[in-house]
Amino acid sequence: MPAAFFIVPYDFPQCGRGNGVVRRAVSIDRRVGKPAVIATVMAAVPKGQSSGSEERIMKTSKSHLRGEDIPASSITPREVGTSRRRFLRASGAGLTGLGGAVLGVLPQRVAFAADSAGTGLAKLTAARNTRYAIADKPTDIQDVTTYNNFYEFGTDKSDPARRAGTLKPRPWQIAIEGEVKQPKVYDIDTLLKLAPLEERVYRHRCVEGWSMVIPWIGYSLAELIRQVQPTGNAKYVEFVTLADPKQMPGLSYPVLSWPYVEGLRMDEAMHPLSLLTFGLYGEVLPNQNGAPVRMVVPWKYGFKSAKSIVKIRFVEKMPLTSWNRAAPDEYGFYSNVNPGVDHPRWSQATERRIGDGGIFTPKRKTLIFNGYGEQVAGLYQGMDLRKFF
Picture 1 (tube, rainbow, N blue to C red):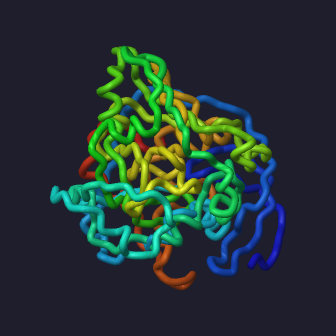
Picture 2: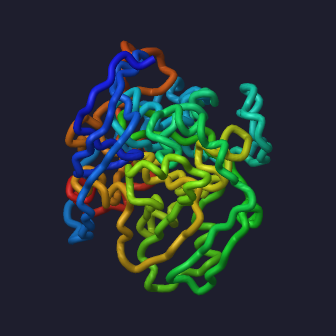
């Protein structure tokens, strides 16, 4: 239970960087000993982010790039993965990210669903692709589904689990628009059948300074991109999420300009790690985790992974994303996990793995690109990752 309430300048996004000063009512959660956002009145001057010239590549150690020092205990308990927002309250630093993969492809039937009671949602059959697996135990599903950041349902970490029952994930359509040869509106069930589903265990890193390990179900976004055939003018992919006040009570709070918008550069969107996601732990996505379809981009902070997507647009210019618009000096367009680039108010050098004991448990070192450097560092060759954060 919260021990105290006070007002402070606070600007945690859903896992990103920003520069607007935000006045928020904050509470102290005794479990974690850090502030928790419970209400927000936010005013920030929208700013774009210039792509500029891409100059120097940041130097990183081989151990960071390989992620070889990830211990077997690093998979977050299943229950931890869901409330990024609850940790927002608990940790006082804000945004999610995923990461940490080990190569090797051995398809198997989903096994994680039997590890706990589950959520009672419909099951999803998927082959486990161990190319994207790590040896650690996954975060407990109770944490994954009750500790969330999903401001459309409230700014408290527990709000999404408590309030997302109003979301109606069926029927659901996703419009594909912009610079494509085959614009189309997909029904969610059609999307589910577009490519074979895979289970991939990814590390998840929130910009707030906490992490999890979650078994997601989906397929590479590239499968959909190839279907719609982008034109030569398509340089970026923009994701627009649902903004329906009848289904999302948190929209009544001026936390951000709704709808929530995110984006990726085209080569990032086409990377095999970028997962169009429909489920976790052998089941369809719970509402509070972004049902019925979301992105998971494991080498970036979690706010880059848009939830409850209704529109995917292919565009020529860099999209003005929600947190970058709200606070451009703190939440950049790229928002790659980077222990060498701190948030203006907290360090990104370490993280607390949800489920790894209490507040006195030592933090673990954060890996460059969340442990996926060997796979994705080439996307940013020649770039100054301090400038293009």
